[in-house]
Amino acid sequence: MKYFLTLITIAFLNTSFFAQASVCGQFHKKYCVLEGSSAGNWQYNAQSKSGLFNQGMVSKLRCVIYKGMDYRISVCCEVTIGDKVNYKIFDSRTNELLFDNATAEDTQTFEFASVSTRQLIIEVVVPKGATEKDKHKAADAACVGLLIEHKITDRQGFSSY
Amino acid sequence: MNKSTLLFLSALTIFTLSGCGDGEKTEEVETVDSTKTEEPKNGQVSETFFQVPSPGEMLTFIKMIGGNTKETSFLNPPANQKNYTDNKLRALNFGIYSCDLSYCSIFEIGSEALKYFKTVKVMGDQLGVATAIKPEILKRLESNIGSSDSLGVITDDVYFSSFEALEESKQGPTLALVVAGGWLESIYIATSLIKKFEPNSAVIERLADQKYTLENLVEFLKKHETDVNVESVRKDFEGLLEEFNKIAEKDAQATKTKDNKAATLTGGKQLVITEDVYKTIVNKIKTVRNSYTLTQ
Image 1 (cartoon, rainbow over the protein chains, first blue to last red):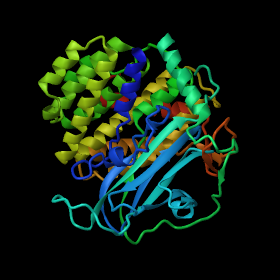
Image 2 (cartoon, each protein chain N blue to C red):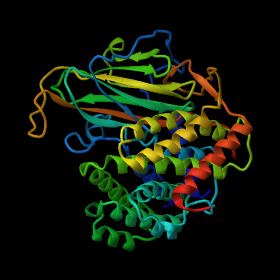
Image 3 (spheres, rainbow over the protein chains, first blue to last red):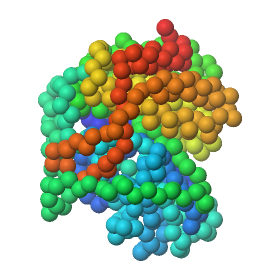
């Protein structure tokens, strides 16, 4: 029973402090989650975010990833079926382009690890296309969700601290 | 470590080692070519958001690599809650108590977790999110004492409701202070658990890496610096960042991880912290944290 308390509290504190409420709310939790991803090995990362953005605009998110961890980024957008969100991942210090989903068949999900702890900039371009009608937002605005998940790559080899 | 925890850790290890691929991929580690440089777009950027990992992530990491303690002497005692009478201290200590709650739960100190849960609830009410913490939730909590899974579900409900209430009521500065308090407490707990400086310790490395998180946090605070309370905290954190900036850097070396099927981003820097810098940072963290908790 005790580990349930641990697990649920982890989930509790992993909640993003920055996610926008109101129109888009926890969009990323509803629409960016992969099918069959609830196995338990991936943990929700607090740096995930949803927001309302105008189509055609670029949005950036600067996050921190740690070495020794695996990460999975899933990007989704409130557009008609078939539209894809373009995103690129940069090293925030050097502006090195680390990943561009346009060169990977527009994949909406990217799994990776890093040899170093670093800040990444995830640049998301919201495509132009039809959006769902909603009285709370402009016609050309769309919800974008960026779901970040993590897991420890391997046991680090330290038995004590 | 009890049987349940061992079972959970074993399952997690199996999942980690087996990965989550489709089973057809090879065991080779894919390396992403990170030599291409491209300026991120600036022309139509709507906004840059600065994100901060949760306090729970740090504590979970410590737990996973072998931390096993029931020590609570360094936490902010729930009795101090009555001392926080202004909005700044209430928001900061809401974050601090939330982190303490996480610590007690992650390290399986159930009785203390309940106390901290109640404290978080009281402070949530004081922050103006009373509508999110309904009386019936407290009754559910009290009737589920001893049932850790139920307690966790209730905790989750309260947090989500409180968070959304803060956002919907446009309390961005309060949210910024909550984030700051939570992060600071997680680092304070980590340094309290470290009994001896060992440069190659995974926890020491993770502590040094907080430099990046702190940079993001300072940027986030800047977005709300027109608020006098946030501005004062930002100055505190920038002073702390000055100490973190004394940590040396060297090129990161690629390390091969067992059975890792994810792509690997190469490059970047490894932070190398000396004992002197570490001690300075620890003292600074303690000073700032205790100035928020009004403790010695």
